[in-house]
Length: 176
Image (tube, rainbow, N blue to C red; front, top):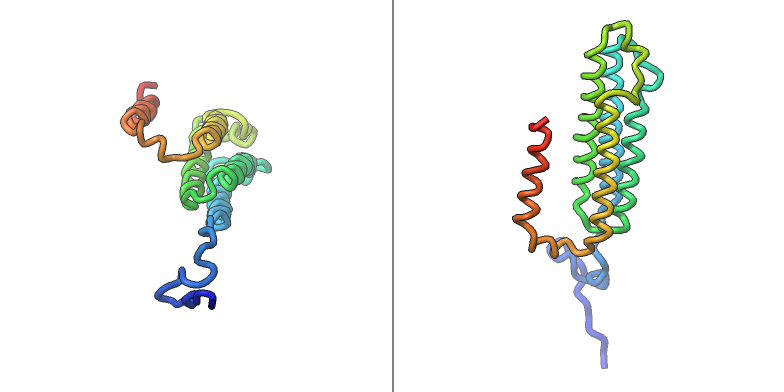
């Protein structure tokens, strides 16, 4: 009796061959590379904000970006273990938008001050730092949901409830 012959992989049929039963790639390294790129963009923006509002680069302009990097790399590690097949573009996009928001709030905080006071204003003060705290809570909440809900398809039963909750959460800042 002869063993069955597996077709060789071709450009038209890349799934053929002995590796056809292998697990699909997780693309977590792509996510990490995009996350690093997002944090570099945030660092450049933070430097520009400090340079343009204070007049010089303060020695600690990079601290909020470093904290955000630690937060989002931690989220990346959690996704690697809890949701390895998740979309690799979502976390870097969220990290970029959130980081730009934190730095933008810092720019607004600096803009409220008189020019001589700006150089002494701590990066751990104001709305920018408060947003950083909300980011920590949101990432911890997302990791907790990933740990609790192992199969995302089970959430489809609550689609309308979750949609309504999302709309209410988006409207909360407008009430302030």
